[in-house]
Image (cartoon, rainbow, N blue to C red; front, side, top):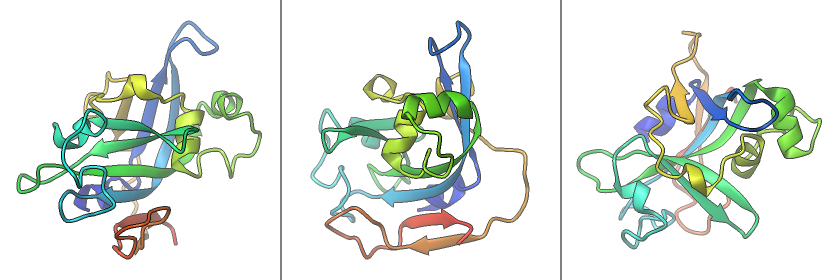
Length: 181
């Protein structure tokens, strides 16, 4: 949960290659909503029943992407995060406020709506061209195709902890963090 809180206000960066230019395009957004997932303490977590080929990044080094396909239609991106006491965990990036590369994101999402552009985990991945090929990327390395930047603002963030959504088990855990509510 510490990392889920700490990611709010940070800049989520995707250096996208081969879109509409030969140079990588910076697609960025301020993280405004996250959701934490644990291990044996969290039945809703993909790690709950142990390590698999799919969830392996949740058990690996902290700061790696965990990208998975869901509902047969879209990808979701998480950042592996767990303490030394826990063997697994991750933080789902639920929403970002688009900053750079908005026109390219609109093309990738087939929408002109800014409000709807990155307002959900699947929308983020579509808008930023994130798929399974970006699984296990180190987000702490600023040269990575996906990484986290601290951002330019030191302003205090109004942060609210809420129940998680879109899950069947352990939904009552207030492990969802939202900026500005």
